[in-house]
Image (cartoon, rainbow, N blue to C red; front, side, top):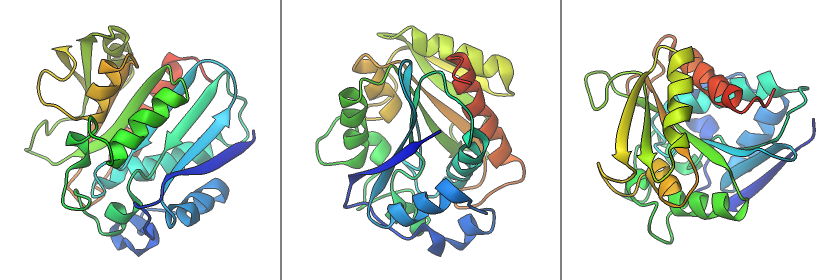
Length: 238
Protein backbone atom coordinates (compact mmCIF):
# COMPACT_ATOMS: atom_id res chain seq x y z
CA UNK A 1 0.00 0.00 0.00
CA UNK A 2 1.49 3.31 -1.09
CA UNK A 3 0.77 6.44 0.85
CA UNK A 4 1.19 10.13 0.24
CA UNK A 5 1.54 12.95 2.79
CA UNK A 6 0.74 16.56 1.91
CA UNK A 7 0.63 19.75 3.97
CA UNK A 8 -2.72 21.52 3.68
CA UNK A 9 -1.91 24.48 5.96
CA UNK A 10 1.51 25.89 6.81
CA UNK A 11 0.61 28.20 9.70
CA UNK A 12 -0.28 25.35 12.08
CA UNK A 13 3.11 23.63 12.27
CA UNK A 14 4.64 22.43 15.51
CA UNK A 15 6.94 19.79 16.96
CA UNK A 16 4.49 17.41 18.62
CA UNK A 17 7.43 15.45 20.06
CA UNK A 18 7.74 18.30 22.60
CA UNK A 19 4.42 17.26 24.17
CA UNK A 20 5.66 14.91 26.88
CA UNK A 21 2.16 13.68 27.78
CA UNK A 22 1.66 12.60 24.17
CA UNK A 23 5.08 11.05 23.70
CA UNK A 24 4.83 8.93 26.86
CA UNK A 25 2.25 6.82 25.00
CA UNK A 26 3.62 7.07 21.47
CA UNK A 27 6.00 4.67 19.78
CA UNK A 28 5.81 5.73 16.13
CA UNK A 29 6.79 3.48 13.26
CA UNK A 30 7.45 4.11 9.55
CA UNK A 31 4.56 6.36 8.45
CA UNK A 32 4.11 7.65 11.99
CA UNK A 33 7.63 9.07 12.03
CA UNK A 34 6.95 10.75 8.69
CA UNK A 35 3.78 12.33 10.11
CA UNK A 36 5.69 13.74 13.11
CA UNK A 37 8.32 15.24 10.83
CA UNK A 38 5.77 16.62 8.36
CA UNK A 39 3.74 18.18 11.19
CA UNK A 40 6.60 20.57 11.90
CA UNK A 41 5.67 22.28 8.63
CA UNK A 42 1.91 22.36 9.10
CA UNK A 43 -1.21 20.20 9.02
CA UNK A 44 -0.45 16.82 7.39
CA UNK A 45 -2.93 15.06 5.12
CA UNK A 46 -2.25 11.39 4.49
CA UNK A 47 -3.75 9.47 1.57
CA UNK A 48 -3.98 5.68 1.42
CA UNK A 49 -5.59 3.51 -1.23
CA UNK A 50 -7.52 4.56 -4.33
CA UNK A 51 -11.01 4.62 -5.80
CA UNK A 52 -14.38 4.87 -4.10
CA UNK A 53 -15.52 5.27 -1.40
CA UNK A 54 -13.41 8.29 -0.52
CA UNK A 55 -13.54 8.93 3.22
CA UNK A 56 -11.82 11.29 5.65
CA UNK A 57 -10.77 10.79 9.26
CA UNK A 58 -9.54 13.68 11.42
CA UNK A 59 -8.22 14.26 14.95
CA UNK A 60 -6.53 17.06 16.84
CA UNK A 61 -8.95 19.93 16.18
CA UNK A 62 -8.46 20.34 19.93
CA UNK A 63 -4.74 19.89 20.53
CA UNK A 64 -5.12 18.81 24.16
CA UNK A 65 -7.38 15.87 23.27
CA UNK A 66 -4.62 13.30 23.00
CA UNK A 67 -6.25 9.82 22.79
CA UNK A 68 -7.62 10.14 19.23
CA UNK A 69 -4.35 11.59 17.97
CA UNK A 70 -2.50 8.63 19.48
CA UNK A 71 -5.13 6.26 18.08
CA UNK A 72 -4.25 7.47 14.60
CA UNK A 73 -0.73 6.12 14.99
CA UNK A 74 -2.23 2.74 15.96
CA UNK A 75 -4.47 2.98 12.90
CA UNK A 76 -1.49 3.68 10.64
CA UNK A 77 0.27 0.57 11.96
CA UNK A 78 -2.94 -1.44 11.59
CA UNK A 79 -3.41 -0.41 7.95
CA UNK A 80 0.23 -0.97 6.99
CA UNK A 81 0.42 -3.56 4.25
CA UNK A 82 -3.36 -3.94 3.88
CA UNK A 83 -5.21 -3.49 0.59
CA UNK A 84 -8.01 -0.95 0.89
CA UNK A 85 -11.27 -1.13 -1.03
CA UNK A 86 -11.35 2.63 -1.52
CA UNK A 87 -9.43 5.74 -0.52
CA UNK A 88 -8.75 6.83 3.05
CA UNK A 89 -7.64 10.39 3.72
CA UNK A 90 -6.40 11.18 7.23
CA UNK A 91 -5.65 14.34 9.17
CA UNK A 92 -4.12 12.72 12.29
CA UNK A 93 -2.78 15.96 13.82
CA UNK A 94 -5.00 18.82 12.68
CA UNK A 95 -3.13 21.56 14.54
CA UNK A 96 0.42 20.41 15.39
CA UNK A 97 1.21 23.72 17.16
CA UNK A 98 -1.77 23.27 19.51
CA UNK A 99 -0.82 19.63 20.12
CA UNK A 100 2.76 20.68 20.84
CA UNK A 101 1.47 23.11 23.47
CA UNK A 102 -1.21 20.70 24.75
CA UNK A 103 -3.78 23.43 24.13
CA UNK A 104 -7.47 23.29 23.21
CA UNK A 105 -7.19 26.59 21.35
CA UNK A 106 -5.08 27.81 18.46
CA UNK A 107 -4.30 31.51 18.06
CA UNK A 108 -6.82 32.15 20.83
CA UNK A 109 -9.77 30.40 19.19
CA UNK A 110 -11.60 27.09 19.43
CA UNK A 111 -11.22 25.76 15.89
CA UNK A 112 -14.32 23.57 16.29
CA UNK A 113 -16.42 26.73 16.29
CA UNK A 114 -14.78 28.33 13.22
CA UNK A 115 -15.31 25.85 10.39
CA UNK A 116 -17.69 28.16 8.52
CA UNK A 117 -15.16 31.01 8.40
CA UNK A 118 -12.30 31.45 5.91
CA UNK A 119 -8.77 31.53 7.26
CA UNK A 120 -9.17 28.92 10.01
CA UNK A 121 -7.73 25.41 9.79
CA UNK A 122 -11.10 23.71 10.34
CA UNK A 123 -12.42 25.64 7.33
CA UNK A 124 -9.36 24.54 5.35
CA UNK A 125 -10.16 20.91 6.22
CA UNK A 126 -13.75 21.43 5.07
CA UNK A 127 -12.61 22.95 1.78
CA UNK A 128 -10.10 20.13 1.33
CA UNK A 129 -12.84 17.55 1.87
CA UNK A 130 -15.00 19.19 -0.78
CA UNK A 131 -12.08 19.46 -3.23
CA UNK A 132 -11.19 15.80 -2.72
CA UNK A 133 -14.83 14.77 -3.24
CA UNK A 134 -14.96 13.09 0.15
CA UNK A 135 -18.05 10.90 0.50
CA UNK A 136 -18.12 10.70 4.32
CA UNK A 137 -16.03 11.88 7.27
CA UNK A 138 -15.41 11.29 10.96
CA UNK A 139 -13.84 13.73 13.42
CA UNK A 140 -12.35 12.12 16.52
CA UNK A 141 -12.19 13.82 19.94
CA UNK A 142 -11.94 13.07 23.65
CA UNK A 143 -14.15 14.54 26.35
CA UNK A 144 -13.27 15.45 29.92
CA UNK A 145 -15.01 13.31 32.57
CA UNK A 146 -18.08 15.07 34.04
CA UNK A 147 -18.11 17.61 31.20
CA UNK A 148 -20.21 17.93 28.04
CA UNK A 149 -20.79 15.27 26.80
CA UNK A 150 -18.52 13.53 29.32
CA UNK A 151 -19.38 10.08 27.94
CA UNK A 152 -18.10 7.91 25.11
CA UNK A 153 -20.37 8.93 22.26
CA UNK A 154 -20.97 9.55 18.57
CA UNK A 155 -22.54 12.86 17.50
CA UNK A 156 -24.57 12.85 14.30
CA UNK A 157 -27.54 14.47 12.60
CA UNK A 158 -30.44 13.36 10.38
CA UNK A 159 -30.70 16.41 8.12
CA UNK A 160 -29.46 17.19 5.55
CA UNK A 161 -27.43 13.92 5.47
CA UNK A 162 -29.33 11.00 6.98
CA UNK A 163 -26.28 8.80 6.39
CA UNK A 164 -24.64 10.65 9.29
CA UNK A 165 -27.20 8.97 11.57
CA UNK A 166 -26.67 5.57 9.91
CA UNK A 167 -22.89 5.79 10.37
CA UNK A 168 -23.37 6.68 14.04
CA UNK A 169 -25.76 3.76 14.54
CA UNK A 170 -23.17 1.42 13.05
CA UNK A 171 -20.34 2.67 15.28
CA UNK A 172 -22.46 2.59 18.44
CA UNK A 173 -23.61 -0.95 17.62
CA UNK A 174 -19.98 -2.13 17.56
CA UNK A 175 -18.60 -0.11 20.47
CA UNK A 176 -19.58 1.08 23.95
CA UNK A 177 -20.39 4.52 22.52
CA UNK A 178 -23.77 6.22 22.92
CA UNK A 179 -25.46 7.89 19.96
CA UNK A 180 -26.12 11.65 20.33
CA UNK A 181 -28.26 12.71 17.39
CA UNK A 182 -29.53 16.09 16.28
CA UNK A 183 -32.47 16.44 13.92
CA UNK A 184 -30.61 19.06 11.88
CA UNK A 185 -26.87 19.69 11.54
CA UNK A 186 -25.76 22.90 13.25
CA UNK A 187 -28.89 23.18 15.40
CA UNK A 188 -27.01 22.84 18.70
CA UNK A 189 -24.15 25.24 17.91
CA UNK A 190 -22.39 26.53 14.83
CA UNK A 191 -18.94 26.01 13.42
CA UNK A 192 -18.18 22.41 14.34
CA UNK A 193 -16.35 20.50 11.61
CA UNK A 194 -18.87 17.64 11.70
CA UNK A 195 -21.87 19.97 11.39
CA UNK A 196 -20.38 22.02 8.58
CA UNK A 197 -19.45 18.87 6.64
CA UNK A 198 -23.05 17.67 6.91
CA UNK A 199 -24.39 21.08 5.91
CA UNK A 200 -22.17 20.89 2.83
CA UNK A 201 -23.53 17.49 1.86
CA UNK A 202 -20.77 15.28 3.28
CA UNK A 203 -22.17 12.80 5.85
CA UNK A 204 -20.09 13.15 9.01
CA UNK A 205 -19.96 12.12 12.65
CA UNK A 206 -17.96 13.18 15.71
CA UNK A 207 -16.62 10.34 17.87
CA UNK A 208 -15.74 11.02 21.52
CA UNK A 209 -13.93 8.92 24.12
CA UNK A 210 -13.45 9.87 27.76
CA UNK A 211 -10.09 11.18 28.97
CA UNK A 212 -8.88 14.15 30.97
CA UNK A 213 -7.81 17.11 28.87
CA UNK A 214 -4.10 17.01 28.13
CA UNK A 215 -3.81 13.48 29.50
CA UNK A 216 -4.15 9.92 28.27
CA UNK A 217 -6.47 8.00 30.58
CA UNK A 218 -6.28 4.22 30.66
CA UNK A 219 -8.03 2.54 27.73
CA UNK A 220 -8.94 5.78 25.97
CA UNK A 221 -6.57 5.32 23.02
CA UNK A 222 -7.81 1.78 22.38
CA UNK A 223 -11.46 2.93 22.50
CA UNK A 224 -10.77 5.70 19.99
CA UNK A 225 -8.94 3.22 17.78
CA UNK A 226 -11.97 0.89 17.90
CA UNK A 227 -14.22 3.77 16.84
CA UNK A 228 -11.92 4.44 13.88
CA UNK A 229 -11.95 0.78 12.83
CA UNK A 230 -15.75 0.73 13.11
CA UNK A 231 -16.01 3.79 10.85
CA UNK A 232 -13.83 2.02 8.27
CA UNK A 233 -15.91 -1.12 8.68
CA UNK A 234 -19.10 0.78 7.76
CA UNK A 235 -17.63 1.32 4.30
CA UNK A 236 -16.13 -2.19 4.02
CA UNK A 237 -12.73 -0.68 3.25
CA UNK A 238 -10.71 -3.65 4.51
